[in-house]
Length: 422
Image (cartoon, rainbow, N blue to C red; front, side, top):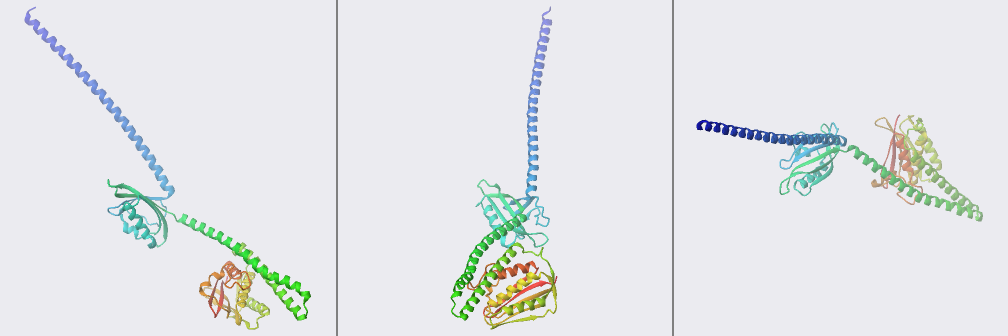
């Protein structure tokens, strides 16, 4: 074979060999690229799956978070310290009239609906957390509704959500909720506690008073009963009998007060009371006659002053009679000379007033409210357990009426009871 042809063939073989090598290299590069692409896509797919799981988790947490907000009836908000602007995010308080902040509401505008007596509290809470003195706050305050001046109780929590590298607060996040029901329950519990404490005090006062009040007439009865056979004259004997009789009456009065105290505790309402038409003038006249017959102080006269004619009202006669008896008894007890007048008059609003006016020692203004409390005695030396006026007030309320007193020390007192006509 000629030398030239051999050279050509060798060149062709060499070129083909190089082409295969390049092709092989190209194939290898393609395979490597495909592998790397597969790896990248697998990694990206895992990242996407992870992100999707995170999104699902966040979505689930948002649902749970919203459920918590709804269950707790919370409103969430943000507060930008630099601009003093509030931004409300959610509101599940379920109070239609409650002031609901709009987007970007200034702090001073929100403060304007806070009750005046709580504004300083709210301002101080935001100041301390905004200046970095505290990281959180918890305040309870009142604020007005949107359409009227009704006040609602609000409980708010807040914390620093964002701060500068130096630790200076930039943004706050917080929650608010209406706690009117909780406050009402707290008030009810406080009233129940006070009532329980008052009941304990009344029991102690009752035991103290009953021991003292019963001791005195019992001693008189026992002592003079033993001395009675030794009386030397008929006059002494009659005096001892008089003291024994008066002591018996005192004991009966004490036991009557105990019965009334029991009725007062058991039945303060008029739900089960038997109501009937009562002739007020006739009842007043009967009460006056009864006490005139029992009155032993000749320096005190009992009068009637009825300006309501033959008026009749629907009420409980027994309780009204008890009220008049206690008022007359008190008037005579604290009037040494002068008069006691029991009467009636018309009042505005279809009300009838029964009053007992005396010229006795009178009552100081600061004592005119507490005399209606159980076991209250302004003079510890007077007879009685201090229940009469308390019973009068309870029975008056049970009849749908009101009771009060107008008095001046040294001048006298006028106790009045206002009752509805029906």
